[in-house]
Amino acid sequence: MIIVYDSHTGLGKAFAESLGYPSQSVKEKLDQDCILITRNVGAGKIPWSTKRFIKKHTHLIKGFVVNGDRIKHAATFCGASPLIVEKYGLLHIRNIEGAGNPEDARLVKEWIENH
Image (tube, rainbow, N blue to C red; front, side):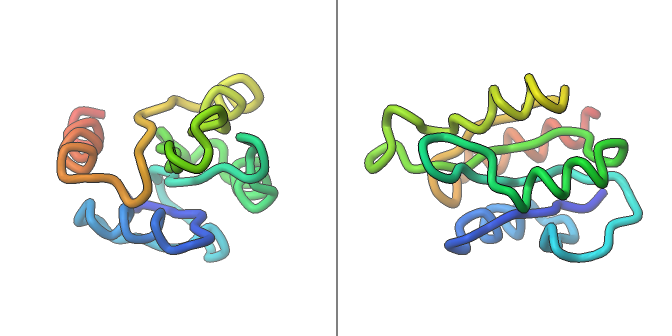
């Protein structure tokens, strides 16, 4: 299992690396099952880079996590999550604030181990 991140500010990358699994950017070649860590753009929309990655690798994505900012974007916090579920049918694991916290990492690792 590998953790793939789409990170603009580095927070998604930091969370991916905190999970203790190999990790890589959505821009790199993928040939194994993964968990996707992504983000919002605009008013809770899916980034184009995430859309492109999902379209190319849907069959390898076992679940996804979205990070967001509750303070600056309270109304659209992790708004990409329901859109990804609706549009692509992917399994939503968790929404996290920024780079996540130890509890977020623990719960996502637990999810990975059980799936």
